[in-house]
Length: 272
Image 1 (tube, rainbow, N blue to C red):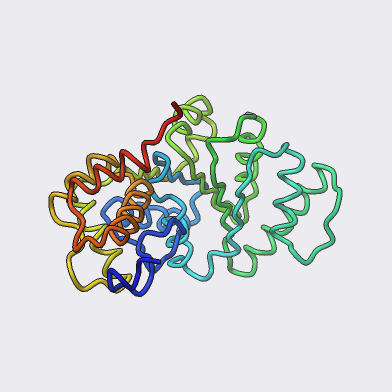
Image 2: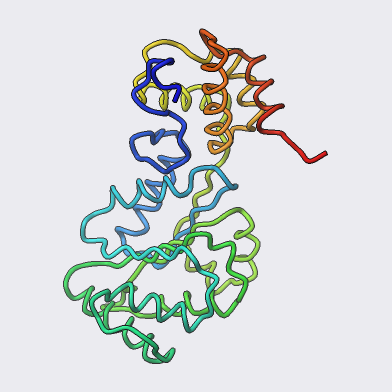
């Protein structure tokens, strides 16, 4: 709606995890480097953690795009709250998508997973199990089942790397499970952006969308960082709304007072 007015090719602050708008900040690049090391060196498990909205999904996508092709398949579990038996059956089906699925006992699912990992390793590949939203797992049996998958070894190395991705609530949960926590080869924490990183992040996304002129002035960036606390998802939401209202009001640029107004009227709305 507002792209032509601001001379953009597309919306720069869409919420989707689009790799074209990936900002290679220090915490993001450090996380990818450490997680690649763990996976490509066939470590048992690794952790990617951070507050809500800090870009864990996008970092996970960029990690998958940069992994050695031999690190396959990458099985992503996006709903880890299912009962343990269903979870193991789901993983078995995901690892062997062409195999006959359907109802199976826990023992049958485990045997399928073990057989697949052995064959996968013999073919020179290393599987990755990415568990998204791992902080939502409420049953310790689920964590224990995931840990036991790491016992499937071929030639002394695990047949897969378990990558746990979740919010910071996951950290104290793992502390209560030393048997799993000790298997984590690396831990990566995504923190909120500093003001400098917020400025670079906004500039990067605008440039990727085709911007050639400065749209947000320095005072706006300072206000943006304060209002969003450096959380990328909040930055995206506020900037998108500011561009929309700025277009409606025919503004030439976005200043601090405009961001303050947008945050007050459209972001911080509360029931009366």
